[in-house]
Length: 434
Image (cartoon, rainbow, N blue to C red; front, top):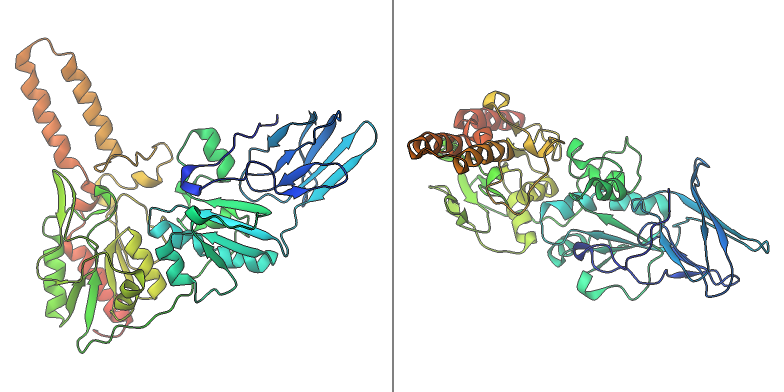
């Protein structure tokens, strides 16, 4: 594999990477670090080096190439690999180094705009720190850092706009990589669609496959209520995360009230979406919506008998709060999130699991993304563009209308009764009903 020249950065989602490697071999003037994969920069002299890069654990040679003076390279694989490299010149000068994180500053950078992803990805960082005995700096959104900071005093939290003054020895980028195949391959060892969201962190950090993370620690102050209650969340970042059965929430909330529960809606918004795909806070709930601190959300969830929600960031708050999570989803398969025995999906819906279909590339910019329907809509629209007889257009318009009715069938065909049966299982497990 040939050497890839440094291009000065990783991604706007992950901040900056130092333009020059942070570690210096004083004898040779060679600089190196592991902040964008293995990076090496040679000194300004007349030396031509033979560079060999190995997997230090297996001894396998990963690449061998000549590296002239005053040049830079970045080995393309950015996730954790136990690197070792040697550099030998014709005058028998030798540089060698093996990745050793013990006592070193290691940065962990994660996506900043979402809620569930950074919680999921953080879950494996404490295991990595314990294994390698490194000094961790976690670049997480402030709202995420605020809920973990007290429980993890040995981990430094920082924001991307306020990059750590101490130049790290290594950096690992925790995210879902949607780009071209080469980008996917270089930033993640496996396709994230084949595993649970939090396991992406385990794979990028090179942790043992058998390791199963528990929910990270955070402070929990259960909400004290004189009446038993349940929390619900009806929305998600995309329309495919909503529950589109028109009577589903009404059915569930009626049942919960019959069981003597108050029902709190904890979404940020009372109304959410883009026309014509608008979703609203269900009727009959206590309005606890608003852009509130996550700690308040966790405390409210922790006092509930369960959280009923979509496959969204608030589901991961339920995971943190350690309450039963009744998770309703059709676009993702049951393994796609953290494990909950209270997962609701309808395999008979006719179309499920597009998120985990490796043949489909997620279009994050389209709110109404429903890829299998979108593909059929595109086919019909292409036919319409070629119509020469105007009388044929109504046929295609009717076909388009039919396709729109099928959009989000994965949750349209999850009935209220299906969810109620899972709620009953939660209550039986908590021994609230027989």
